Length: 264
Ligand SMILES: [Zn+2]
Image 1 (cartoon, helix red, strand yellow):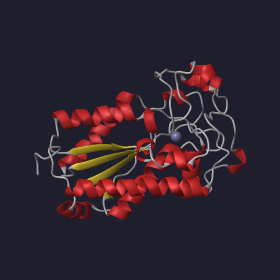
Image 2 (cartoon, protein in one colour; image 1 turned 90 degrees about the vertical axis):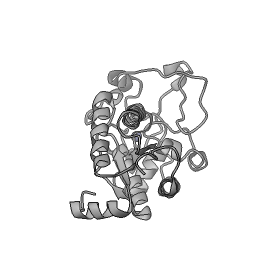
Image 3 (tube, helix red, strand yellow; image 1 turned 60 degrees about the vertical axis):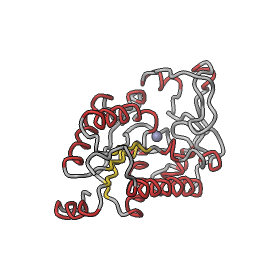
Image 4 (spheres, helix red, strand yellow; image 1 turned 120 degrees about the vertical axis):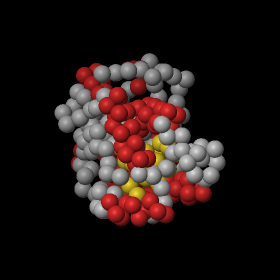
């Protein structure tokens, strides 16, 4: 969208009403991953799927809810409330001009999701019943594919997300800094927090930790091994998620059901 003129956006709205909004984070991703990993994930998924499906993609939001990574320099976090207000204002602006299918594409997994979901749920309930809001995240969009692509448990800065960046932005991963280091989840969280975001999990709970505590239990910032990072894994992961996003667009284009039906 940032490369178009307002007249071009207006003519897009004459035949389509879908917008993708990429939302990431700027936070530590271990010794091998750049701070922008989660933003790059959101941007590349949104832009690729948008291009393939011919829908508009807004400029990205580079900051997310990252206070738990704040023990590492370069991490820039916004509070959940700030993120919610920002997303709300972006969506309001889009809805005002007639976008009625708004897909938030998150690159920061579970840490942004509560704020994003709460934000658009309230917008849909209280202000824009005629707009369909969807929140897309690789965590859920790759549920069937991830276990067949990755070779080890995947948490923060692991082989899947670093492979994804390696595939889409070659040169950004410090291949000589890949590491086997990870968090001993049993020891740190007593077996109540799983060590694999894309795999089986224990009967568990959410446990909060601070940025300083995180730096103490993982001095490198790596939560799971990144040694298995390859371009091929990144390609399989990326193509699967982009394909699924394109299917979402197909469904949104023909959908005429009870959600968001009030403004035609
Ligand atoms: Zn990440």
